[in-house]
Amino acid sequence: ADEVIHTVRLAVSDPELKKAAGIIELTELSKLTPLERQVLVDKHLVSPQQIEEPAGRAVVLNADESLSIMINEEDHLRIQCLLPGLQLQEAWEQATKIDDLLEKTLDFSYCGRRGYLTACPTNVGTGLRASVMMHLPGLVMTNKIYQALQAISQLGLTARGFYGEGTEALGNLFQVSNQITLGLTEEEILKNILTVAKQLIAQERAAREMLFKEHRVYLEDRIGRAVGIMKFARVLTSEEALRMLSDVRLGVDLEIVKGIEKKKLNELLMLTTPAFMDKKSGREMTPQERDTGRAAIIREILDSLKVES
Image 1 (cartoon, rainbow, N blue to C red):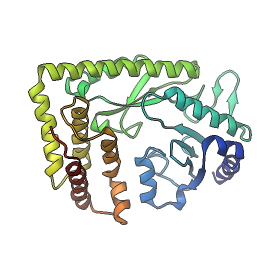
Image 2 (cartoon, rainbow, N blue to C red):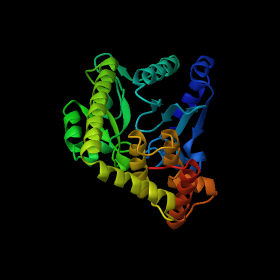
Image 3 (tube, rainbow, N blue to C red):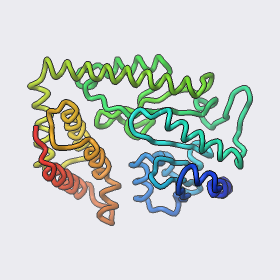
């Protein structure tokens, strides 16, 4: 494991790669505190599985953290590019550029017939996992989410929770990605994901329109309660905060809630995670302290922005 880290450290020091990726830094996870490692998970820069046994594992990040190269996670290398919106093509182009540059100095395990050979059989082939994070409260509230997710599973795709495989879809956030990579080209995988994402967007919009048209009072009441609770609550758990933020985000989209941008809601999503709160306080807080601290952070931000519903 240490030999792999050393080899990758030399590879990422290549001037051409630094020019393509910007300022990059390799960090060994064993040299970070448990809190610092959890912050990386909360920011989706490493996986929860990678920090379980940090020894012999590392991550390479660029300046804006849009690029993450996980070392000795499930495979020796996992290149990840995160971009907002449906910029799958752009994310893939950036990731494949880094992959090509690394391949100049690293000898990847590749079979002419099967493609890239990976630790998990489902990744054999292109080795590409394309994902989109989607906020689908309308489908959840109309009880159509299970039907929608079942339909995409028949197309070779899967939906995971906020932190990937094996996690819950907290805050109505679903991570939609391809299940297999063998027998498909990168272009076909991206096309499939984009097609399904657009279909889910259309279904979500239809669900929201139905709710707004047929259950407007209920919808406004639910969103208004979320705003009220978040503006005045003194104690909020992580689950409650995610649920309320989901409702407020829906309210912003439907123009029921005004005076707050979705970017600020995204910031709240991160700022109120246990790891971020512990980091800000400089110590490990008790669950009770986090719950009161979380409520205080949300009250302050929502009050200053004068959210109205």
